Length: 120
Image (cartoon, rainbow, N blue to C red; front, side):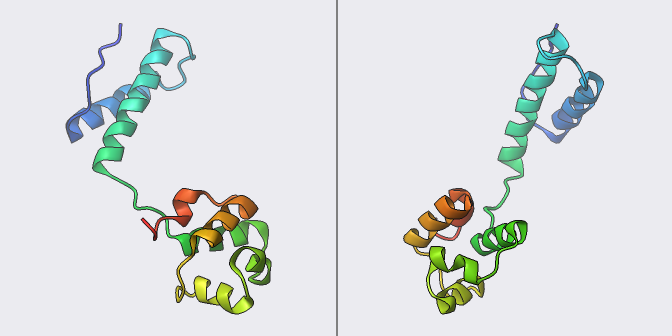
């Protein structure tokens, strides 16, 4: 039987992690598996509220994608504009426009959340 309660304190969080360790590897669809899943959701909720992650930096998101795909600044021109404009964006001298954000999202599959961090 599950003895689940909301996580309100660091002590509750530590207890939830300890219980999670005990349940680790439980098969899905079993009472233990269900308890593990509920604990994971409660821990995630607590951490989101108490340890929020800052939005990622748009320039870092672009550079990360460039590194992943082996792209050069020239490869960004269809999404951002002239080579000078690409350089300005990557050197943080120019903010991304909404058009650039749309093109980068659709063309390079960079999440909107990453690209909009400086806009919101």
